[in-house]
Length: 195
Image 1 (cartoon, rainbow, N blue to C red):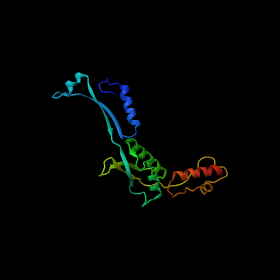
Image 2 (cartoon, rainbow, N blue to C red):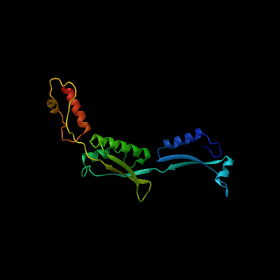
Image 3 (tube, rainbow, N blue to C red):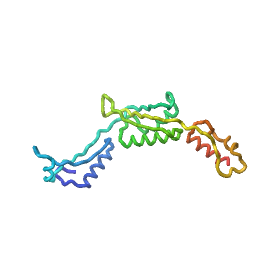
Image 4 (cartoon, helix red, strand yellow):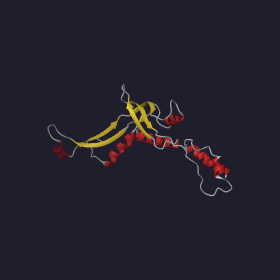
């Protein structure tokens, strides 16, 4: 876009595309507003057919640290807590974007469900630091809810010469143990090889 040139949709798209491609801004927004001469209201200035084009660029926020908090994840650096931290996908020094927060929430919910937390709630929040508002700490509040336990194991279909008890003995999953997706997948593969 050039000063004094007609406002053209292609030029606006190209400007927005370039701003997004730079990957240096948390948000990019474009809008126009009429020029109001001194003492004139905005409505009467609309007749001049001139506008001010505004490209609003939200300054990026650079991650300084991460914090995972919430009850029920086990004290200290539990296996689940370490896996959650690894799956954040945000490294110290990276930039925050609104879409990144949505991806963090989706990824963490999937990981928690894989570990048997089917009622989990996740809330990622960037908190600007007091010293420099372009830096932030990523705080992720997790309410995991109750972890699912295996109530029983049942088999469907033709088991051939095998009893359900004999097949259940080959599984790592057992009634009373917590559900883990990977363990269930391993059990399924083990049974496929056995049968």
